[in-house]
Image 1 (cartoon, protein in one colour):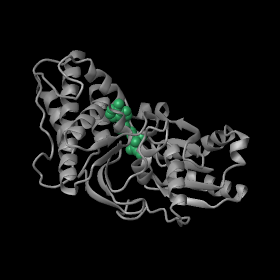
Image 2 (tube, protein in one colour):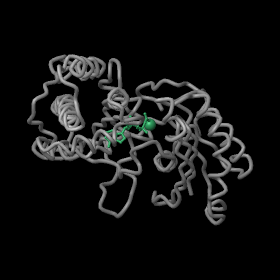
Image 3 (tube, helix red, strand yellow):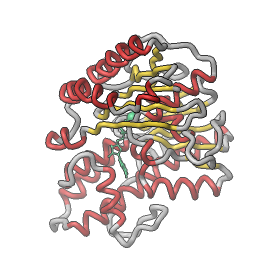
Image 4 (cartoon, helix red, strand yellow):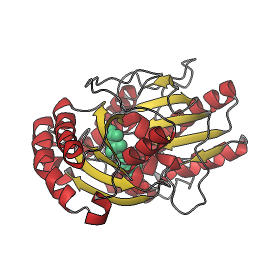
Length: 343
Ligand code: KG4
Ligand code: ZN
């Protein structure tokens, strides 16, 4: 069995998957409430909390699973250095105690492969090549996934990530951190937004990077546009106005993501697209992408919602894929930047 420890950011997770890849155990310790008063993650606090949370998560693992572990993985990057170190140190001790090999794993590769985690047998097998859009609090990237170990960066955000934009807008409007889920709920209460995220209402926001001629993204200008719109509005906006404004915001965000994905599908001729990361929970994005992909003859695949936000199950699954492919344990180098084509 394959076990993994994940502590790249503010969630600590330990998960085990079986030889067939099914997730047998997944424990997660969320720090959302701990960081909420600060309006964002406090790295030092996150790292210290991981140090005390990990042994507790480990103790929750059923003993029959512990004895079945043959390979252990740990997220080696990218992430907050202190948080990564907490996980790596813990995993090193575990690997020694269990006498199993320890693998350093790339967090982004974990997200990218998360849509293929087996659940009920209806999901397609891991297929290459395909396109992968990763949308989270820290990442907005488009990859050409040629194989498990040949993942090429096609485009990325030039500034803020999508989740970061949502979290900042949420803080500005007074809806707290993190903001994505709460903002989606509010936007859904606006009657002028359809299931596929087409907006009919009074607000206007630009679709970022529409004509940039490349596969990159940018969301800081959109954040400024929202700030200006709220500031320049002559009346003060109530909750119903916020719902309309947020519906408008989601419509341009989803549109901007789809434009680049459609270009990439056309350029590569690929027929499969995956969307992963915390923002992939978003129902507007899922519905729009599923419909648009189908219209172009492609298939859009999403992880189960519990595998979208940071979690250790996706890392255990990634470890299983590497071991099956004959990959050897990776050395630790604490390199915190993704290098396309490597992991
Ligand atoms: O993958 P994740 O845990 O973070 C990184 O690894 O960066 O994703 C967290 C992000 C946050 O920005 C949060 O606001 C966003 O995912 N998010 C959502 C939704 N739920 C969480 N964004 C849009 N719609 C949602 N329903
Ligand atoms: Zn992540």
